[in-house]
Image (cartoon, rainbow, N blue to C red; front, side):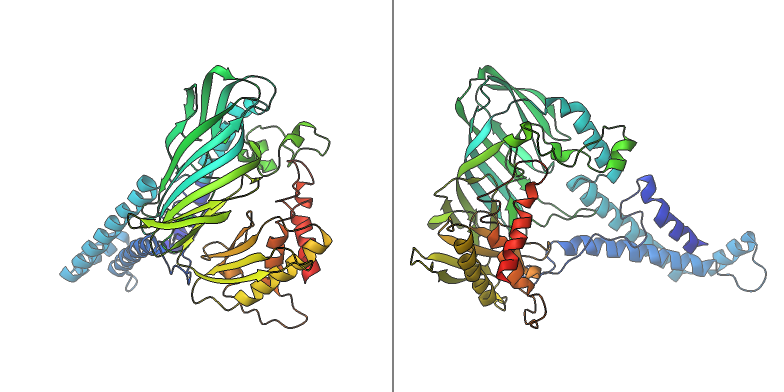
Length: 500
Protein backbone atom coordinates (compact mmCIF):
# COMPACT_ATOMS: atom_id res chain seq x y z
CA UNK A 1 0.00 0.00 0.00
CA UNK A 2 2.80 2.42 0.89
CA UNK A 3 4.60 1.77 -2.40
CA UNK A 4 1.38 2.32 -4.36
CA UNK A 5 0.87 5.58 -2.48
CA UNK A 6 4.43 6.70 -3.34
CA UNK A 7 3.99 5.91 -7.04
CA UNK A 8 0.65 7.74 -7.17
CA UNK A 9 2.08 10.72 -5.29
CA UNK A 10 5.03 11.03 -7.65
CA UNK A 11 2.62 11.39 -10.56
CA UNK A 12 0.01 13.55 -8.81
CA UNK A 13 2.05 15.98 -6.69
CA UNK A 14 3.75 17.87 -9.57
CA UNK A 15 0.34 18.43 -11.16
CA UNK A 16 -0.74 20.08 -7.88
CA UNK A 17 2.33 22.39 -7.88
CA UNK A 18 4.16 20.27 -5.30
CA UNK A 19 7.31 20.19 -7.42
CA UNK A 20 9.92 20.54 -4.70
CA UNK A 21 12.27 17.58 -4.35
CA UNK A 22 11.26 17.31 -0.68
CA UNK A 23 7.86 16.00 -1.79
CA UNK A 24 8.99 13.62 -4.51
CA UNK A 25 10.45 10.40 -3.19
CA UNK A 26 14.10 10.09 -4.20
CA UNK A 27 14.15 13.59 -5.70
CA UNK A 28 17.59 15.22 -6.03
CA UNK A 29 18.97 18.33 -7.71
CA UNK A 30 21.02 17.41 -10.75
CA UNK A 31 24.69 16.52 -10.30
CA UNK A 32 27.25 16.83 -13.08
CA UNK A 33 30.95 16.03 -12.89
CA UNK A 34 33.39 18.27 -14.71
CA UNK A 35 37.07 17.45 -15.09
CA UNK A 36 37.74 21.19 -14.92
CA UNK A 37 35.82 21.87 -11.71
CA UNK A 38 34.98 18.45 -10.28
CA UNK A 39 31.57 18.16 -8.64
CA UNK A 40 31.99 21.73 -7.49
CA UNK A 41 29.06 23.28 -5.69
CA UNK A 42 26.73 20.38 -6.53
CA UNK A 43 28.09 18.22 -3.70
CA UNK A 44 26.53 20.07 -0.76
CA UNK A 45 23.00 20.02 -2.13
CA UNK A 46 23.25 16.43 -3.28
CA UNK A 47 24.59 15.31 0.11
CA UNK A 48 21.75 17.06 1.95
CA UNK A 49 19.14 15.28 -0.15
CA UNK A 50 20.96 11.95 0.24
CA UNK A 51 20.78 12.30 4.03
CA UNK A 52 17.13 13.39 3.81
CA UNK A 53 15.98 10.44 1.70
CA UNK A 54 18.10 7.90 3.59
CA UNK A 55 16.45 9.14 6.78
CA UNK A 56 13.01 8.78 5.19
CA UNK A 57 13.92 5.28 3.99
CA UNK A 58 15.18 4.35 7.47
CA UNK A 59 11.93 5.50 9.08
CA UNK A 60 9.85 3.60 6.52
CA UNK A 61 11.87 0.42 7.15
CA UNK A 62 11.49 0.80 10.92
CA UNK A 63 7.74 1.36 10.64
CA UNK A 64 7.38 -1.61 8.31
CA UNK A 65 9.43 -3.82 10.65
CA UNK A 66 7.41 -2.81 13.71
CA UNK A 67 4.06 -3.43 12.05
CA UNK A 68 5.15 -6.51 10.06
CA UNK A 69 2.34 -9.06 9.75
CA UNK A 70 3.19 -12.44 11.29
CA UNK A 71 0.61 -15.19 11.09
CA UNK A 72 -3.06 -14.76 10.24
CA UNK A 73 -4.14 -12.43 13.05
CA UNK A 74 -3.62 -8.99 11.52
CA UNK A 75 -6.31 -6.59 12.79
CA UNK A 76 -4.89 -3.11 13.25
CA UNK A 77 -5.25 -3.16 17.05
CA UNK A 78 -3.22 -6.37 17.24
CA UNK A 79 -0.54 -4.95 14.96
CA UNK A 80 -0.30 -1.80 17.11
CA UNK A 81 0.00 -3.96 20.23
CA UNK A 82 2.72 -6.05 18.56
CA UNK A 83 4.56 -2.91 17.45
CA UNK A 84 4.61 -1.62 21.03
CA UNK A 85 6.00 -4.94 22.20
CA UNK A 86 8.74 -4.84 19.57
CA UNK A 87 9.71 -1.24 20.41
CA UNK A 88 13.07 -1.96 22.03
CA UNK A 89 15.62 0.64 23.09
CA UNK A 90 17.59 0.03 19.92
CA UNK A 91 14.53 0.62 17.75
CA UNK A 92 13.58 3.74 19.71
CA UNK A 93 17.11 5.06 19.21
CA UNK A 94 16.93 4.28 15.49
CA UNK A 95 13.58 6.10 15.19
CA UNK A 96 15.03 9.08 17.07
CA UNK A 97 18.13 9.20 14.85
CA UNK A 98 16.08 8.81 11.67
CA UNK A 99 13.63 11.52 12.73
CA UNK A 100 16.44 13.89 13.73
CA UNK A 101 18.23 13.36 10.40
CA UNK A 102 14.98 13.76 8.48
CA UNK A 103 13.95 16.99 10.21
CA UNK A 104 17.47 18.42 10.35
CA UNK A 105 18.33 17.78 6.72
CA UNK A 106 14.85 18.87 5.65
CA UNK A 107 15.20 22.18 7.49
CA UNK A 108 18.64 22.71 5.92
CA UNK A 109 17.22 21.98 2.46
CA UNK A 110 14.30 24.38 2.98
CA UNK A 111 16.68 27.11 4.16
CA UNK A 112 18.93 26.71 1.12
CA UNK A 113 16.27 26.23 -1.54
CA UNK A 114 13.69 28.80 -0.39
CA UNK A 115 15.59 31.36 1.71
CA UNK A 116 19.09 31.56 0.22
CA UNK A 117 17.71 30.78 -3.24
CA UNK A 118 14.39 31.44 -4.91
CA UNK A 119 12.00 28.56 -5.41
CA UNK A 120 9.11 29.02 -7.79
CA UNK A 121 6.84 26.23 -9.08
CA UNK A 122 6.34 26.20 -12.84
CA UNK A 123 2.75 27.45 -12.54
CA UNK A 124 3.93 30.44 -10.50
CA UNK A 125 6.56 31.21 -13.13
CA UNK A 126 3.88 30.94 -15.79
CA UNK A 127 1.67 33.37 -13.87
CA UNK A 128 4.56 35.84 -13.70
CA UNK A 129 4.95 35.71 -17.47
CA UNK A 130 1.21 36.24 -17.88
CA UNK A 131 1.28 39.25 -15.56
CA UNK A 132 4.34 40.64 -17.34
CA UNK A 133 2.47 40.63 -20.63
CA UNK A 134 -0.83 41.93 -19.25
CA UNK A 135 0.76 44.74 -17.24
CA UNK A 136 3.50 45.90 -19.59
CA UNK A 137 2.64 44.86 -23.16
CA UNK A 138 1.12 48.32 -23.55
CA UNK A 139 4.66 49.76 -23.54
CA UNK A 140 6.06 47.54 -26.30
CA UNK A 141 6.13 50.28 -28.94
CA UNK A 142 7.38 53.02 -26.63
CA UNK A 143 10.55 54.71 -27.91
CA UNK A 144 13.55 54.01 -25.68
CA UNK A 145 17.21 55.08 -25.58
CA UNK A 146 19.58 52.90 -27.59
CA UNK A 147 22.95 51.76 -26.27
CA UNK A 148 25.90 52.95 -28.37
CA UNK A 149 28.89 52.28 -26.08
CA UNK A 150 29.62 49.80 -23.26
CA UNK A 151 32.36 50.18 -20.64
CA UNK A 152 32.41 47.31 -18.13
CA UNK A 153 34.30 46.49 -14.94
CA UNK A 154 33.72 42.91 -13.78
CA UNK A 155 35.07 41.46 -10.53
CA UNK A 156 34.82 37.67 -10.40
CA UNK A 157 35.40 35.88 -7.10
CA UNK A 158 35.44 32.21 -8.16
CA UNK A 159 35.93 30.58 -4.76
CA UNK A 160 33.19 32.67 -3.19
CA UNK A 161 30.94 32.23 -6.24
CA UNK A 162 30.34 35.96 -6.38
CA UNK A 163 30.49 38.50 -9.20
CA UNK A 164 30.09 42.25 -9.41
CA UNK A 165 29.66 44.01 -12.74
CA UNK A 166 29.84 47.80 -12.90
CA UNK A 167 29.25 49.55 -16.15
CA UNK A 168 28.81 52.82 -17.98
CA UNK A 169 26.45 52.74 -20.96
CA UNK A 170 26.35 55.57 -23.46
CA UNK A 171 22.76 55.80 -24.70
CA UNK A 172 21.27 57.97 -27.43
CA UNK A 173 17.79 59.02 -28.50
CA UNK A 174 17.49 57.95 -32.14
CA UNK A 175 13.68 58.02 -32.17
CA UNK A 176 13.28 61.54 -33.55
CA UNK A 177 11.01 62.53 -30.65
CA UNK A 178 11.53 63.32 -26.95
CA UNK A 179 11.69 60.34 -24.57
CA UNK A 180 9.99 61.00 -21.24
CA UNK A 181 10.19 57.51 -19.71
CA UNK A 182 12.91 54.88 -19.52
CA UNK A 183 11.75 51.30 -18.96
CA UNK A 184 14.38 48.98 -17.49
CA UNK A 185 13.87 45.22 -17.54
CA UNK A 186 15.99 42.51 -15.95
CA UNK A 187 16.67 38.98 -17.14
CA UNK A 188 17.74 37.41 -13.83
CA UNK A 189 15.71 38.16 -10.67
CA UNK A 190 18.58 36.80 -8.54
CA UNK A 191 20.88 39.63 -9.65
CA UNK A 192 20.99 42.49 -7.14
CA UNK A 193 20.75 45.99 -8.61
CA UNK A 194 23.09 47.86 -6.27
CA UNK A 195 23.13 50.97 -8.47
CA UNK A 196 21.21 52.19 -11.49
CA UNK A 197 21.89 55.84 -12.21
CA UNK A 198 20.06 57.56 -15.08
CA UNK A 199 20.56 61.32 -15.51
CA UNK A 200 17.51 63.46 -14.68
CA UNK A 201 15.51 60.33 -13.86
CA UNK A 202 13.09 59.63 -11.01
CA UNK A 203 11.96 56.09 -10.25
CA UNK A 204 8.19 56.22 -10.75
CA UNK A 205 7.36 52.48 -10.78
CA UNK A 206 9.12 49.35 -9.55
CA UNK A 207 8.02 45.74 -9.90
CA UNK A 208 10.85 43.77 -8.23
CA UNK A 209 9.21 40.38 -8.79
CA UNK A 210 9.63 40.51 -12.57
CA UNK A 211 11.78 42.81 -12.37
CA UNK A 212 10.54 45.93 -14.22
CA UNK A 213 11.28 49.58 -13.51
CA UNK A 214 9.96 52.80 -15.03
CA UNK A 215 11.94 56.03 -14.70
CA UNK A 216 10.51 59.45 -15.53
CA UNK A 217 12.90 61.90 -17.22
CA UNK A 218 12.58 65.60 -16.39
CA UNK A 219 13.20 67.20 -18.77
CA UNK A 220 12.66 64.48 -21.40
CA UNK A 221 15.59 63.18 -23.44
CA UNK A 222 15.76 65.27 -26.60
CA UNK A 223 16.18 63.76 -30.08
CA UNK A 224 19.84 62.89 -30.78
CA UNK A 225 20.77 63.60 -27.15
CA UNK A 226 23.26 61.28 -25.46
CA UNK A 227 23.94 60.60 -21.80
CA UNK A 228 25.59 57.93 -19.64
CA UNK A 229 23.75 55.33 -17.59
CA UNK A 230 25.80 53.86 -14.75
CA UNK A 231 25.03 50.61 -13.01
CA UNK A 232 26.31 48.09 -10.50
CA UNK A 233 24.85 44.58 -10.76
CA UNK A 234 25.84 41.87 -8.29
CA UNK A 235 25.24 38.19 -7.84
CA UNK A 236 26.21 36.16 -4.79
CA UNK A 237 25.47 32.46 -5.29
CA UNK A 238 24.78 30.99 -1.86
CA UNK A 239 23.87 27.49 -0.79
CA UNK A 240 22.07 25.28 -3.28
CA UNK A 241 18.82 25.42 -5.22
CA UNK A 242 16.09 22.82 -5.56
CA UNK A 243 16.90 22.43 -9.24
CA UNK A 244 18.96 24.28 -11.80
CA UNK A 245 21.94 25.23 -9.65
CA UNK A 246 23.73 28.27 -11.05
CA UNK A 247 26.64 27.05 -13.16
CA UNK A 248 27.86 30.43 -14.37
CA UNK A 249 30.02 31.29 -11.36
CA UNK A 250 32.19 28.36 -10.25
CA UNK A 251 35.58 27.79 -8.66
CA UNK A 252 37.26 27.01 -11.99
CA UNK A 253 35.53 27.90 -15.24
CA UNK A 254 33.15 30.81 -14.61
CA UNK A 255 31.15 31.97 -17.63
CA UNK A 256 28.83 34.98 -17.43
CA UNK A 257 27.18 36.83 -20.28
CA UNK A 258 25.77 40.27 -20.85
CA UNK A 259 22.12 39.21 -20.74
CA UNK A 260 21.97 39.05 -16.94
CA UNK A 261 24.59 41.62 -15.98
CA UNK A 262 23.49 44.88 -17.55
CA UNK A 263 20.26 46.87 -17.78
CA UNK A 264 18.06 46.43 -20.84
CA UNK A 265 15.69 49.11 -22.06
CA UNK A 266 12.14 48.59 -23.24
CA UNK A 267 9.53 45.85 -23.10
CA UNK A 268 10.98 42.46 -24.03
CA UNK A 269 8.54 40.17 -25.90
CA UNK A 270 10.98 37.33 -25.38
CA UNK A 271 9.77 37.05 -21.77
CA UNK A 272 6.18 36.32 -22.80
CA UNK A 273 4.58 32.88 -22.70
CA UNK A 274 5.32 31.26 -26.03
CA UNK A 275 3.48 27.93 -25.90
CA UNK A 276 0.14 28.29 -27.78
CA UNK A 277 -1.68 25.94 -25.38
CA UNK A 278 -0.48 27.83 -22.30
CA UNK A 279 -1.54 31.12 -23.89
CA UNK A 280 -5.03 29.77 -24.57
CA UNK A 281 -5.28 28.56 -20.97
CA UNK A 282 -4.65 32.12 -19.78
CA UNK A 283 -6.86 33.81 -22.41
CA UNK A 284 -3.91 35.49 -24.06
CA UNK A 285 -4.12 36.35 -27.76
CA UNK A 286 -2.40 34.26 -30.39
CA UNK A 287 1.28 35.16 -30.61
CA UNK A 288 3.36 34.76 -33.76
CA UNK A 289 6.71 33.09 -33.13
CA UNK A 290 8.39 36.04 -34.82
CA UNK A 291 7.20 39.13 -36.68
CA UNK A 292 6.19 38.65 -40.30
CA UNK A 293 8.83 39.32 -42.90
CA UNK A 294 7.03 42.45 -44.17
CA UNK A 295 6.73 44.03 -40.70
CA UNK A 296 8.51 47.35 -41.15
CA UNK A 297 8.63 48.09 -37.42
CA UNK A 298 10.40 44.80 -36.65
CA UNK A 299 13.21 45.78 -38.98
CA UNK A 300 14.36 48.34 -36.43
CA UNK A 301 15.98 45.69 -34.20
CA UNK A 302 18.34 42.77 -34.67
CA UNK A 303 17.17 39.47 -33.24
CA UNK A 304 19.95 39.75 -30.64
CA UNK A 305 18.71 42.94 -28.92
CA UNK A 306 15.95 45.52 -29.06
CA UNK A 307 17.86 48.32 -27.32
CA UNK A 308 21.09 48.51 -29.32
CA UNK A 309 22.68 47.99 -32.71
CA UNK A 310 26.49 48.16 -32.90
CA UNK A 311 28.38 49.39 -29.84
CA UNK A 312 31.93 50.25 -28.89
CA UNK A 313 33.14 47.92 -26.14
CA UNK A 314 35.81 47.80 -23.46
CA UNK A 315 36.12 45.69 -20.31
CA UNK A 316 38.34 45.52 -17.26
CA UNK A 317 38.06 42.14 -15.55
CA UNK A 318 39.56 41.00 -12.26
CA UNK A 319 39.76 37.47 -10.91
CA UNK A 320 41.75 35.24 -8.56
CA UNK A 321 45.55 35.47 -8.94
CA UNK A 322 45.80 31.90 -10.29
CA UNK A 323 43.23 32.43 -13.06
CA UNK A 324 43.01 34.14 -16.45
CA UNK A 325 39.95 36.28 -17.20
CA UNK A 326 38.90 36.87 -20.80
CA UNK A 327 36.37 39.14 -22.50
CA UNK A 328 35.90 40.08 -26.17
CA UNK A 329 38.55 42.46 -27.41
CA UNK A 330 42.32 42.77 -27.49
CA UNK A 331 44.34 42.55 -24.31
CA UNK A 332 45.75 46.01 -23.58
CA UNK A 333 47.17 45.48 -20.14
CA UNK A 334 47.55 42.85 -17.42
CA UNK A 335 48.51 43.53 -13.81
CA UNK A 336 48.13 42.35 -10.21
CA UNK A 337 46.80 44.51 -7.41
CA UNK A 338 45.45 43.77 -3.94
CA UNK A 339 45.92 40.03 -4.35
CA UNK A 340 43.87 39.95 -7.55
CA UNK A 341 44.70 39.66 -11.24
CA UNK A 342 43.40 42.29 -13.69
CA UNK A 343 42.95 42.27 -17.47
CA UNK A 344 41.98 45.17 -19.73
CA UNK A 345 40.33 44.38 -23.10
CA UNK A 346 39.26 46.80 -25.82
CA UNK A 347 37.59 46.27 -29.19
CA UNK A 348 38.88 48.35 -32.10
CA UNK A 349 35.59 48.29 -34.02
CA UNK A 350 31.88 48.25 -33.09
CA UNK A 351 30.32 44.93 -32.09
CA UNK A 352 26.86 43.67 -31.21
CA UNK A 353 25.94 44.31 -27.58
CA UNK A 354 26.50 40.62 -26.94
CA UNK A 355 29.51 39.78 -24.81
CA UNK A 356 30.75 37.40 -22.15
CA UNK A 357 33.40 37.13 -19.44
CA UNK A 358 35.18 33.88 -18.55
CA UNK A 359 37.67 33.02 -15.82
CA UNK A 360 39.58 29.78 -15.19
CA UNK A 361 42.97 28.29 -14.48
CA UNK A 362 43.86 28.11 -18.16
CA UNK A 363 46.75 26.76 -20.15
CA UNK A 364 47.03 28.72 -23.41
CA UNK A 365 48.11 27.14 -26.70
CA UNK A 366 48.95 29.69 -29.39
CA UNK A 367 49.32 29.62 -33.16
CA UNK A 368 48.52 31.93 -36.04
CA UNK A 369 46.86 31.90 -39.44
CA UNK A 370 48.43 33.76 -42.36
CA UNK A 371 46.07 34.83 -45.18
CA UNK A 372 46.78 33.44 -48.63
CA UNK A 373 47.33 36.97 -49.94
CA UNK A 374 50.09 37.51 -47.38
CA UNK A 375 48.15 39.96 -45.22
CA UNK A 376 48.45 40.46 -41.48
CA UNK A 377 48.42 37.17 -39.53
CA UNK A 378 45.51 36.30 -37.24
CA UNK A 379 46.41 35.07 -33.75
CA UNK A 380 44.80 31.78 -32.69
CA UNK A 381 44.58 31.07 -28.96
CA UNK A 382 43.03 28.04 -27.26
CA UNK A 383 42.42 28.54 -23.53
CA UNK A 384 42.00 25.07 -22.05
CA UNK A 385 42.29 22.97 -18.90
CA UNK A 386 45.88 21.76 -18.55
CA UNK A 387 44.89 18.09 -18.98
CA UNK A 388 42.63 18.75 -21.98
CA UNK A 389 45.09 19.16 -24.82
CA UNK A 390 43.74 16.11 -26.69
CA UNK A 391 41.94 17.99 -29.46
CA UNK A 392 43.60 21.40 -29.29
CA UNK A 393 45.63 20.88 -32.47
CA UNK A 394 42.50 19.68 -34.27
CA UNK A 395 40.68 22.86 -33.18
CA UNK A 396 43.57 25.02 -34.38
CA UNK A 397 43.49 23.21 -37.72
CA UNK A 398 39.73 23.71 -37.94
CA UNK A 399 40.11 27.44 -37.28
CA UNK A 400 42.78 27.76 -39.98
CA UNK A 401 40.77 25.82 -42.54
CA UNK A 402 37.66 27.83 -41.73
CA UNK A 403 39.49 31.13 -42.12
CA UNK A 404 40.97 29.93 -45.42
CA UNK A 405 37.59 29.05 -46.89
CA UNK A 406 35.46 31.83 -45.42
CA UNK A 407 37.86 34.64 -46.37
CA UNK A 408 38.07 33.25 -49.89
CA UNK A 409 34.33 32.69 -50.36
CA UNK A 410 32.77 35.47 -48.24
CA UNK A 411 34.94 38.38 -47.12
CA UNK A 412 38.08 39.14 -45.07
CA UNK A 413 38.03 38.15 -41.42
CA UNK A 414 37.28 41.34 -39.48
CA UNK A 415 39.42 40.69 -36.38
CA UNK A 416 43.08 40.07 -35.56
CA UNK A 417 42.48 37.05 -33.34
CA UNK A 418 40.34 33.97 -32.79
CA UNK A 419 40.09 32.67 -29.24
CA UNK A 420 38.45 29.45 -28.05
CA UNK A 421 37.88 29.12 -24.30
CA UNK A 422 36.94 25.94 -22.48
CA UNK A 423 34.27 26.02 -19.78
CA UNK A 424 32.93 23.16 -17.59
CA UNK A 425 30.53 20.61 -19.01
CA UNK A 426 27.74 21.74 -16.69
CA UNK A 427 26.44 23.08 -20.00
CA UNK A 428 27.00 21.50 -23.41
CA UNK A 429 27.25 24.11 -26.13
CA UNK A 430 29.63 26.43 -27.91
CA UNK A 431 28.77 30.09 -28.50
CA UNK A 432 30.38 32.70 -30.68
CA UNK A 433 31.05 36.19 -29.32
CA UNK A 434 33.18 38.77 -31.15
CA UNK A 435 36.57 37.06 -31.77
CA UNK A 436 35.91 34.95 -28.65
CA UNK A 437 34.28 31.49 -28.61
CA UNK A 438 33.38 29.82 -25.28
CA UNK A 439 33.33 26.06 -25.88
CA UNK A 440 32.12 23.38 -23.43
CA UNK A 441 34.63 20.75 -22.40
CA UNK A 442 32.04 18.10 -23.30
CA UNK A 443 31.62 19.46 -26.84
CA UNK A 444 35.15 18.70 -27.93
CA UNK A 445 37.89 19.07 -25.35
CA UNK A 446 37.41 15.59 -23.88
CA UNK A 447 35.92 13.94 -26.97
CA UNK A 448 37.46 11.02 -28.79
CA UNK A 449 38.08 12.77 -32.09
CA UNK A 450 39.60 9.75 -33.82
CA UNK A 451 36.72 9.23 -36.23
CA UNK A 452 36.50 7.02 -39.29
CA UNK A 453 36.46 8.55 -42.76
CA UNK A 454 32.72 7.96 -43.09
CA UNK A 455 31.89 9.52 -39.69
CA UNK A 456 31.26 13.17 -38.87
CA UNK A 457 34.16 14.82 -37.10
CA UNK A 458 32.02 16.91 -34.79
CA UNK A 459 35.00 18.71 -33.19
CA UNK A 460 35.89 20.01 -36.65
CA UNK A 461 32.23 20.69 -37.41
CA UNK A 462 31.41 22.59 -34.20
CA UNK A 463 34.58 24.67 -34.43
CA UNK A 464 33.91 25.59 -38.06
CA UNK A 465 30.29 26.44 -37.22
CA UNK A 466 31.30 28.84 -34.44
CA UNK A 467 34.02 30.48 -36.54
CA UNK A 468 31.40 30.95 -39.27
CA UNK A 469 29.32 33.00 -36.83
CA UNK A 470 32.04 35.65 -37.02
CA UNK A 471 30.52 36.32 -40.46
CA UNK A 472 26.94 35.13 -40.00
CA UNK A 473 25.61 37.11 -37.00
CA UNK A 474 28.68 39.18 -36.18
CA UNK A 475 28.79 40.81 -39.62
CA UNK A 476 25.49 39.95 -41.31
CA UNK A 477 22.56 39.68 -38.90
CA UNK A 478 18.83 39.44 -39.44
CA UNK A 479 16.14 41.64 -38.00
CA UNK A 480 13.86 40.29 -35.27
CA UNK A 481 11.46 38.73 -37.75
CA UNK A 482 10.78 35.51 -39.62
CA UNK A 483 13.86 34.26 -41.41
CA UNK A 484 16.33 35.85 -38.99
CA UNK A 485 18.07 32.60 -38.17
CA UNK A 486 18.49 31.82 -41.86
CA UNK A 487 21.17 34.52 -41.91
CA UNK A 488 22.91 33.23 -38.79
CA UNK A 489 22.33 29.56 -38.00
CA UNK A 490 21.52 28.23 -41.46
CA UNK A 491 24.41 30.05 -43.09
CA UNK A 492 26.77 28.94 -40.32
CA UNK A 493 25.65 25.35 -40.80
CA UNK A 494 26.22 25.67 -44.53
CA UNK A 495 29.63 27.25 -43.95
CA UNK A 496 30.66 24.46 -41.58
CA UNK A 497 29.71 21.89 -44.21
CA UNK A 498 32.02 23.67 -46.64
CA UNK A 499 34.88 22.92 -44.23
CA UNK A 500 33.96 19.26 -43.65
